[in-house]
Image 1: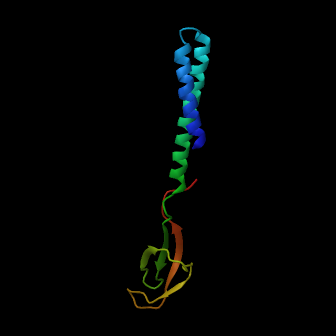
Image 2: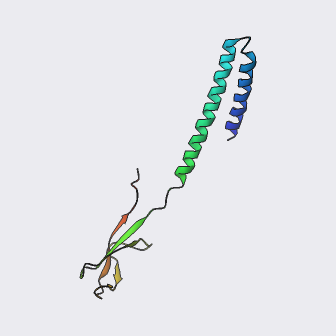
Image 3: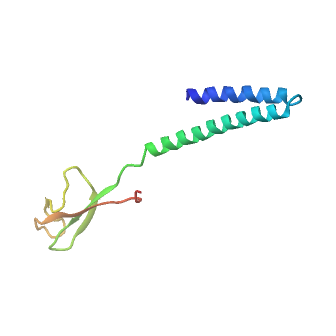
Length: 115
């Protein structure tokens, strides 16, 4: 941030020099103008890069789901993943048929693919 502030000051100073020396020496004024444009360009690109970094730093939370099935009556439920869930974990009684064979058969990530 400090470098950006210094470059903005340098850019304004060289832009002022370019405007004041334009009538006497065109090549020197062009050099000053080039330095000012490069300084402004560097600051703009740095600001956009920092903003992009902030946007990437806070990704959306993961949406992990667990598949719960009953092998007796083919009851299937998809629920949010909880800490401690694992495949083949027995969960207890089935709400449809009443048999104690409800278990987690799969865990997956539901969301956009990551690169």
